[in-house]
Image 1 (cartoon, rainbow, N blue to C red):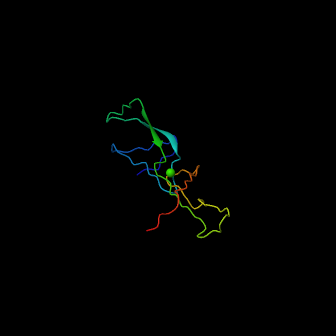
Image 2 (spheres, protein in one colour):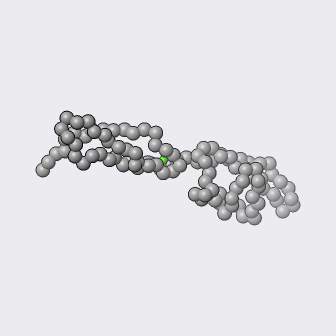
Length: 106
Ligand SMILES: [Ca+2]
């Protein structure tokens, strides 16, 4: 586990390191670069190798539709999607409404 700070090296004796991310220490959505330099037992340092890791919103949002239970004949009414929410660091930017027709009885 390691809390990475920009341009501050983290030194480990092992070839694996966890980039620790918690709700209080998130990494923003987008492209992030990491660099590795290795040092041998004689103290020789490698040239740096770098990678780009893309932090992406991969979680679908949840739709919550609310409406009046009963509405009067020939009266407009509202559908409300404001209780919908997203996960994964993103936000909802579009509401796609569809009338599915009369409910079939029986
Ligand atoms: Ca999302």
